[in-house]
Image (cartoon, rainbow, N blue to C red):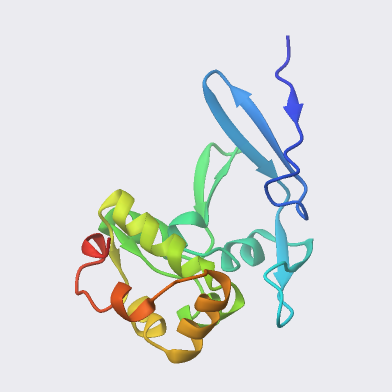
Length: 160
């Protein structure tokens, strides 16, 4: 019997994503895509894209590693994901300021990854996080978020 693919409309309503259960592991499957953010909306305009475009739109380089089923190899289209994973570093594929202003919640995901896996945040993430424009954008997305008390610490795993 083949595994079934179930719709998940509550998660990423605007994306065409399928979750397949392989044994006890759930695997999300989607096409490669590129996206454009319009001001005032966290929901991007999504189009089919290349592997390079998909990798560059990711929040972190370590989330931009692709497993190629045909070659059975990991592909690193940013050239930074594999080294960052080995070093335990959270870094954005594009400039951090641009990445986080497109979607301010990406900053929280970066911190969550750093805390969860004991990784360091790249200096560019820390610099972007201290910018008033990003703190304001994040405060609009997360009610009660107080960036000054959250970001001044030196070591990311100690943020929480």
